[in-house]
Image 1 (cartoon, rainbow, N blue to C red):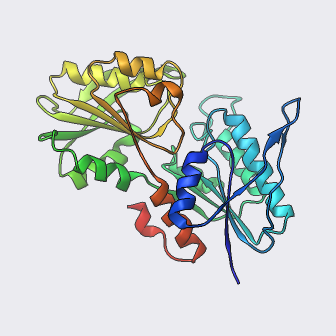
Image 2 (cartoon, rainbow, N blue to C red; image 1 turned 180 degrees about the horizontal axis):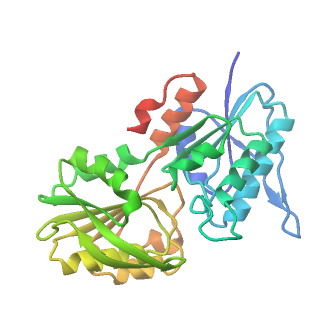
Amino acid sequence: MRRIVLVSGSSNIELAKSISASLDVGLIDAQLRKFANGEIHCMIEKNVRGADVFVLQSVCTPVNDSLMELLIMMDALKRASANSITAVLPHYAYARQDRKVSPRTPITAKLVADLLTVAGANRVITMDLHAGQIQGFFNIPFDNIFAFPVILEYLMGKNDLPNIMCVSPDTGGVERVREYAKKLKCDIALIDKRRTGPNVAKAMNVVGDVKGKDLIIIDDMIDTAGTLVEAARVLKSEGCGKIIACATHAVFSDPAIERIMACNELSEVVVTDTIPLVEKARTCSKVTVLSTAELLARAIHRTFNHDSVSSLFI
């Protein structure tokens, strides 16, 4: 008889507990600890022989520790004779390094894909992958679930945005923004952005008429918030109304929260719980957090039952 097992790393235990509650399946402790020199040790506390195991781990700060935890847990499960291992990564780190942008640089997103496969993953489930082509780095089934339904439901419940327009902070996010605009029945605009260095962006101009509109900036992640704040300032200079930002992954590296709090043009920043909030963000009045637990639980349940997950993609 097939059985489902959930195992969680330490990076996002609150989300793992919420997924466990949604599925009504207990969460197995991976018994992770560190030796004095920083090496990670794992011992799965219960028998998983013949089980279909879902390993829940957001690869987030500290990124390398989170990644090593995930690899070590999967290796332990493989050697414990698990029937299948599905790596559930609400946030897939290193996704921004998906191609060679200059000579003698790595494609680290591909390296991570190889590591996950070698460690024992039979399938990967992630959410809002930064670069969709990363799916092609895997020779195992890969499901990229979108937080779109969660964020859309929140936006449609707001009554203080009578004249809205969706905005993409760069050309790469236009397709994502178009999906939101279709459901919200509104137009879209685009920020023409120039990147002058890592985590440094300079917004040049706005493509589209935003004057008098309440704007929703939609992106997949907020790291240092440099792009977001610059976009908000440029949009405000065009005569728009209220500005709300929405993103799936709240990376919030310093000085993101300081920038968001200092940016009077931004009225709210909506994110999900794929990454646990840093302490500064927890106390930030502008930040709203939405749960993806139910969405990920449905993806896990359908995967275990060999049902289609295609309805979760739209």
